[in-house]
Length: 443
Image 1 (cartoon, rainbow, N blue to C red):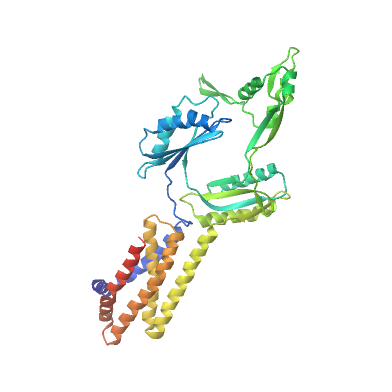
Image 2 (cartoon, rainbow, N blue to C red; image 1 turned 90 degrees about the vertical axis):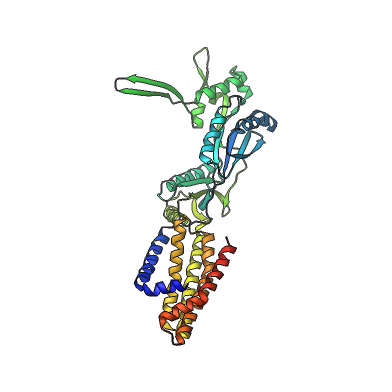
């Protein structure tokens, strides 16, 4: 500390320039730092799900889970494998070792699962995904006494609009049922038209599908041929031909079955302000700012409220940015109070010039800390803000202690340069050790 004091006195211009640089660079750094609720971290989990409609848990365990487990045992970087056999689907969750590369492991797992050719015929294609922790930032509640289809269509439009907005990249629909086309076949109609149930199933499978047709080579290049036959609405399924009768008439699916173009038969009901609702949840990636996203969503809702169909309302729900902004405001208030307190106390009882320079040292210290945080790729979050609020009190106390001791030496008649060196020599070491013990305790 004595050496630092001597160097600062002998290089006053340099010290002032460094102080100005830290203040300006720190202010720029703060304006560019990301703000979030809590720091993001990798979960290191990969999930494999295989739908098997109508199958019991025992059938799924033997036909799906066991086969996946056997294939995945030889992959490097896997810590453990957790399987779950439920009615209608089976899932295998893989926990990776902390040193494993998640992307490489995901590719290896996909390759091994794709090699399995002994899954039951009725099972659907395996879905392999990395479990990613998503941070919900803000939700938009779409609610009103309207039909479920209209409510979902409006929610989907809002989702698409928000995804197209610059600071937003992840938006999900919450509390809504997925679309589903149900085909209810009457046994009486099957008998009337002499059609079996298996024939109806085969007709639906083969009549609603997109098929590649290869390529046609020409002098100008290759032309990709593809058959577009996928059906998407109930009316399209109603016109699906089943058989052609001897008199040339075509029996279509709508004549044999009741086609319901609706939603899945699951118990999902969402209400907001006592009315049916759908939630549009806006999430953030690790590179996006929570306050910027929330501000954009609030502005969108403010504009779109007046453009909604009759009976539909929009409101903001679960705005996480409010918590982050409140903690930032708390830090600013405490910082201003601390600087003001230090200045007033030192100005009243010691010296006005001393009070000014000691008070200036508090924001300079914070600016330097933000520069260090940014260099470590840290963010402004609840944890880092808590640390700043806690250390603010320590910084204020230490500033008063060092300033008062230097003033005491100066009052004895010592020159200012000598008073600074002797004052730092006496209390500099204890102050550093006191701060160090706090750092060690929270490390």
